[in-house]
Image 1 (tube, rainbow, N blue to C red):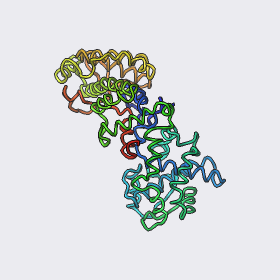
Image 2: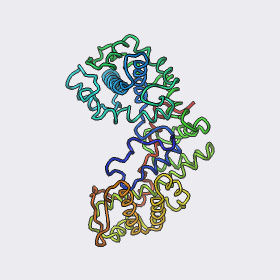
Image 3: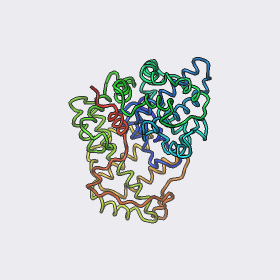
Image 4: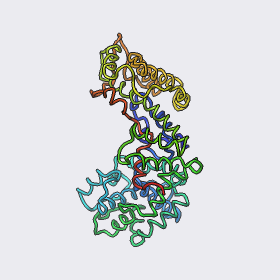
Length: 423
């Protein structure tokens, strides 16, 4: 499961990802980060997830709720936590912050409900913590299978670390998450203060150790107990990169060099990611550029690219053949062939072949989705069906540093910044 863990934000919706590269960068990224997704980058988000699951388990376990109530209980818990963190702790990093602000501007007496009157997101089930954090939490060893329950280690942690804060107001919290209702979202409300105290801005020492092990190091994810690779990678990220900046090619180069002495397989997988991104980034750029060139010939587009990028695209001078079997396994053999053809054409500065290959590539991807291609060649010129937005292509020097896909490294950077480097 850990190699194919799907990134909720990267799922194809409608006509997104016209070259179908998400399975490629996602698959290559899973060799580096085994448990996180691009959006599961908030430690406090996992705290709320555990609390929502805990309250559901508690109520179902003692007969005060049924299993089908697990999701409504969770959504109400998520709402309570969001208001408490924002009103008392002044936290701005909660999902649904815009609706939280809107509801509070209307009234400090807020509704905690499983429905539009209470939801802090348009579709809180899908785009809240239940939908976006459950899979990475389960892979990390924090959740039991199914919609109810925690693992033993998570339950023990919640009961020791968080539940003492809830003791004075537990009956009120239980009523709200089970039945819904109104409460005052103010600093004078003991319920709000208790919930905020359980989730302070700064992580406690116990939290640093717990989330560091399970989220940053993925110590319970498949394979990590043997390789410790993610723990090594997180430590290297802390030492070799700026954790507040998105990952870029220079980061990957620094990590590759530093990992040679600590974990040779890690250096190998980083090298593969750098090699793959050297192709995917210019492919994305060229395709986006093509979407603004309706009515132009492939030769005219190739001339513009040659003027901008020169006779050879950077970072593509090493063979890509060894990566193609994995690309074929992650996608299709046709897409792998397209990638091989494109790599050679970009390396040779054969931009007309680049344009034609990208058109074929998009056509195959969209056919698999039972959709029309975004661009075709008709009467020897581009017939663009899905017009793009004009933007300037980077020059050759800038192209050498372009990085478009995350490979889940930004999420690991964020979690590492919140939990600190492993001791």
